[in-house]
Length: 330
Image 1 (cartoon, one colour):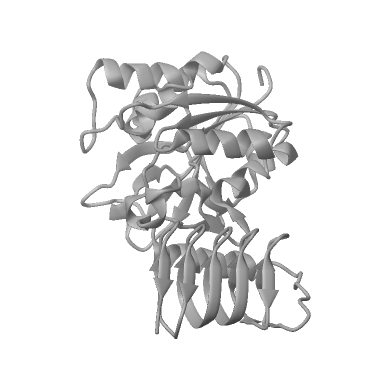
Image 2 (image 1 turned 90 degrees about the horizontal axis):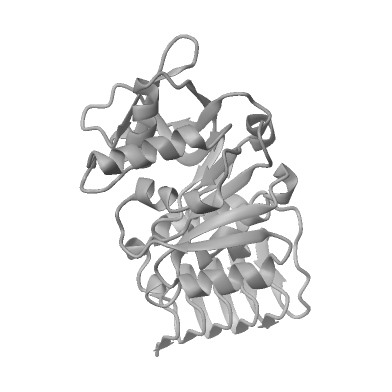
């Protein structure tokens, strides 16, 4: 390998399916299992020997920048704005000015996953993280030959010939072939569904004889909708062994309560994540994400996401409450 590996993390998505929460907060800063989505990615980089990252920002990018700089001072970071949403391929191409011909790990900023990335980075071929899915029409897919070499990549095919979905994790042993292909699809105006896709750039690489392989992604957790965010919260909390001890309250594990949260006379869990600064009083809460500085009092809630600085008081409901909202239920 030439040079140290660098991470490229696109985080410019708007997250329309997670509204109202993404009206005031970037999708990657939404909490799941005790910390923001992007923290699940950044926390793993040191263990992979990665000390430098390029983040492609867009929607409320200043908030992403502030969070990363404040919480990851040991990570050398570059922030590049994608002013117009022209696709994932275009977003990745914007990182070129900060990347030499060195190993590159690309991870979509809203992708939480389980995979042997140490083994992948020790490999000698470009490789794409994949997972078998029931409905491959929703994803970019790959086809491989008997030797595991990628023969075709297609973005969201109507008639897929493979069920191997691209999970949003990519490793390139050196960056030049990737950036050459990204430049070429933009020069030739190759778009899928109106956007420059990373999938199309990799397909061009395959056509040019570049060897791409795949690696399995064991866990791939969707954070794109409220329902799937809660499901991911359940799965990740279920992997934790710690249980908070809160005098005067009952905890049904798994539960995560951040430092600085105040919990009085509550029953929490299972599957509850509480952010820093939250205040919970006289509440029964299960299967829920309570974000930072939210207030929840005198209520029973489940299957709910409560945004930052939101205030919820009242009776039993299923809620999806955006940041800085106030809900009083009588």
